[in-house]
Length: 174
Image (cartoon, rainbow, N blue to C red; front, side, top):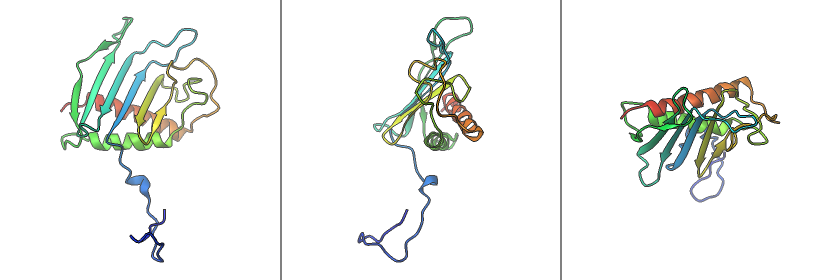
């Protein structure tokens, strides 16, 4: 990207700046992680659902809701919701959110949506914000088709890291 002087006119002393490493996630976003997305004839039965919300009304806090299905039971059981302060020096929540945002900007989703669990983890992530809408697995899970898009091993490793980040954020205590 070329930078210009304040006048808006190009200058001879232009610089190249890599904005990739300084892009911050939006002040407002929602991310959801679901374990259990692969179905077949019947829709998948989720094992866990975690939702993290940062609102512009309180951007210093991450609201976390989790539901987990105990082994051998038919439905998800909610855990008490919690608020996690972002930027608290006792944990790395802000750095984790930044890393998650940058990973999801780089990796692909299946095409058509919901056709195949291309990351092979029976897990979906959905991120919704002003600058990024990203979702793998489709709203009804994956139904056994084939995706035209297949991730590289590096992209699969990045998705695994994204799952680890969301899981870690849900486990942090304030």
